[in-house]
Length: 273
Image (cartoon, rainbow, N blue to C red; front, side, top):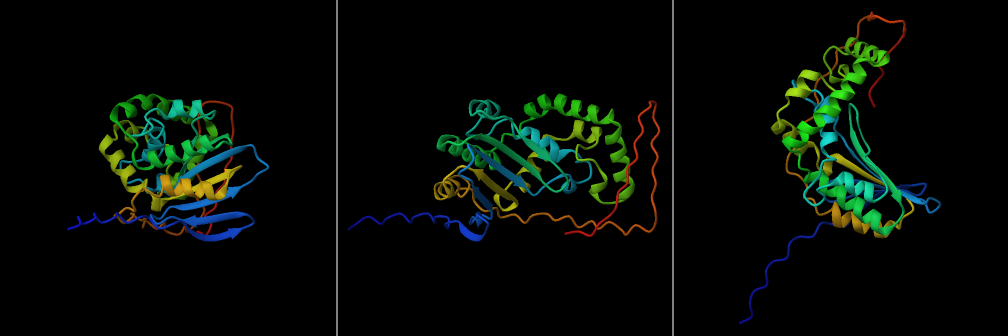
């Protein structure tokens, strides 16, 4: 009698081509990740950018600044890349990340070699779902975040922007600065940061862009090997349902502080989309 063969695990489907426009091609992985490839043989470098469709507008009450804090913590290491800052330096690049209302992104530009590209894709895929998000790292980064806050508190245009946004939006999170309130940032429980990370940092809520000098088919195979191995999440993404009421008249805010610097700002609501 022949032994029964163990059933083979289902392999993720090959990346699906969505569209090509002027040499830029979009693909979709089985787990929901959007991939945009922009090969340019005239360049000597490659840029890898991962954008997550989550920002400060997705924060709940008491969570202001959480999206920005996570940006910092994603440079503190992951399961298979425990020292990301050193790896970035070793590959001739540096930490790059930004947080805004609707998105958070991470990117690196490096010399166009197969080894560098393989490393970058492996690192970005690993920190998508395996970042440490540890209490000790939160404590160590708090000084850096406080310095950013204090710089903003002493910047006249930043102070004016905060007041203008708070006046323009009565209910929506667009009325709060992305860096958050100091009281929230200093008191946030690590468990809430971890839950925020697990919910939003998933392939179906992200877009990967690779641009520069690379072979498209080899790169697509690498992406399938690294990002394609991440399972599609079972959770349903939380959607922002707060609707800002229509503005029914002119709103004016005046900020007076000691000093000679003067600024004037104006803002308008525009249709979404």
